[in-house]
Length: 286
Image (cartoon, rainbow, N blue to C red; front, side):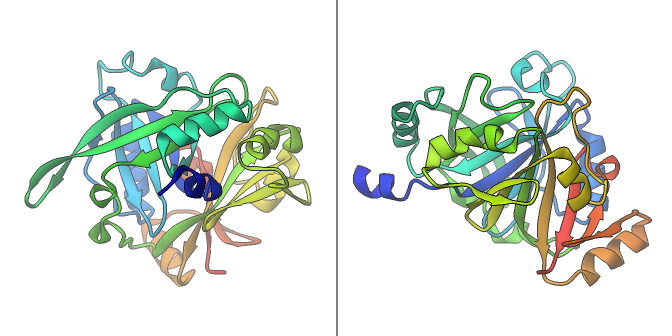
């Protein structure tokens, strides 16, 4: 792809959502398995963090934490509150992303490469990535970055996309903010102009199959039936995900059998942050 063609395709597409579980990887993996997600085997990054993934059609969620004794290896990550802390976009080209963001006045780190061994029937292979991270105070209580998959075939594998709860994709990523337009301005600078659409209580923009919503805390509470956390100090916080299912009967049946509480909300049903590693999880068939 030429630079001009890549630049023309420079638009927000959600790659994955990061849930910071700190030193509670086992507990979080157990929670998400009970919620009906098929998780990959635990992976270990060359940078020191560890994860389990739930892979969907075009995006995925990541439970990210550390093993005992490794909490100082990525101390910058664990400074964020436990819960949803990563909004990650797909990268068309890491170097082009970096230069484009710099030219648009977005504070950004140079591309950083790392890897994670993946165990497959034919033997272990290294999944390799390059990330470009937005820096400074533009994102509170979390990170926004771009992920370039050098080896997408080692992540987006069909056998990992089948989930007992029927989830096929993340379709909403929600940030609570007292100033939605101000919080979302960095994304308008990254991808705009005219990226943002106003809605009741905030703004949103499309990111591939997903929408990113930046909403006032009261609007989050109303939309997610009080299932989401908000920051006690009034700072921005990433708080909720909505997941697409073919039929709400699948998660309902699973949750009823597992004794997991859920409630109705505008999009379908929602599980409280208390049962999902500090993230409200909505499930919708629409």
